Picture 1 (tube, helix red, strand yellow):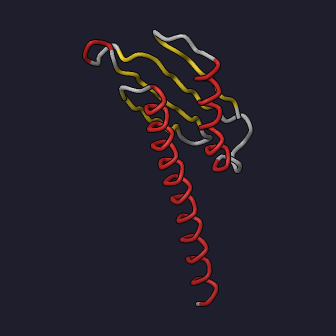
Picture 2: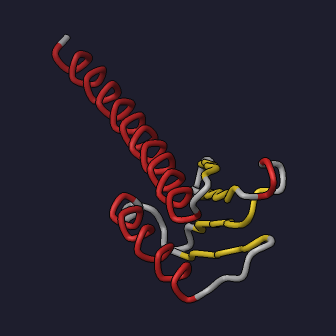
Picture 3: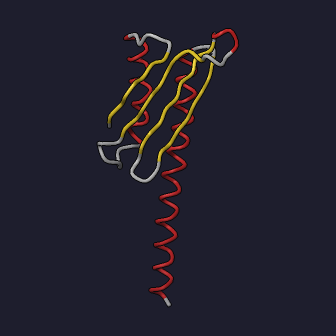
Length: 117
């Protein structure tokens, strides 16, 4: 899994980099079934559209084999924005994995019915 961090209007400090790495560990557990070439793009920076430039923006994008998951969050605190975006992308990942599981179960159920009849 490749993690790329991009900053806009903000200097990437070691503390921010470590915090992002810590938050992406929970994503790695859900991405174990995907190839190691999976790319996670994280963009953090000051939000220029927010009032008085006091807000921070965090965006996360994960490119999977068949689709791209994307989440964004704006907050007055950079770390809170990172937490929010991680939670959003985590829910997207869970939703995506449950959809795949449901499709497999439907296919297996259909085959089972065909065998019985």
